Length: 107
Image 1 (cartoon, one colour):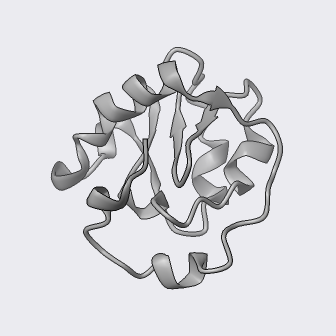
Image 2 (image 1 turned 30 degrees about the horizontal axis):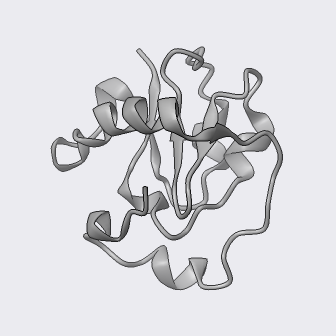
């Protein structure tokens, strides 16, 4: 089992989760983070750090978000590791409440 970043992260991209990851499993894209499933050690530390509740155990990902499981794996192979906290986008508070953001994901 691994942990998965889901739609709530799109355009919010808070990086608090990165700071607590003991194995540097997070990868950064233009407006989204993913977790590399081959690096994740299932420690759960990142879950509590996410202010928008975007991170779930693979077994607990909601049905309408399950496409994020293979997406995390795919993008983790392309994107570079992020190992330190960065400021969230200025409009992250607005985007935290928006639903159906998948079409806004920048690869």
